[in-house]
Image (cartoon, rainbow, N blue to C red; front, side):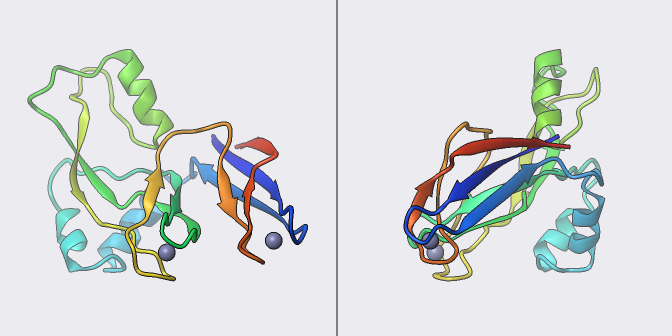
Amino acid sequence: MGWGYSFICKKCQKEYDVYVGAGEDDGRNLLMDIAAGKYGEEMRQGVDTPGIQVSSNLFLYVCDKCHNWETGPDLTLYIHDEDKPPASGIEQLEYSCRGLSVWPGERPLKPFWRKECLCKRCNSPMRMIEEETASISLACPECGEINANYAEILWD
Ligand SMILES: [Zn+2]
Ligand SMILES: [Zn+2]
């Protein structure tokens, strides 16, 4: 399941929505893009490591420098952490909310390699919003005014 946020700009009245959360493809599209080299050679090679997983979710990225934002995949390769005891039921649920799967008896996942998402406008590193929050402020795509969302949307 996914979630989203609705906005109405207080300056120019533009309505805009942002949707994040679950995709339907188990991360397969992302894996195909990585294999095709869309995210560079280092990530393309990293994904060949046995046991690698990627998230199937869409995430929100925010640039704290210029307030640009976009949605995109989590460009992190995850691997099972053999130093940790098998994941608990709660941990398994948390992973599935993040678009990752850990089965009973499997070790928790840890980041193995991460590609930084850079702002297309100012080239600064963007911050990935990992948790679902009730309220968020994002710049209007029309005029740049920062608005708080007025509603939360759930979708599947
Ligand atoms: Zn920026
Ligand atoms: Zn506006």
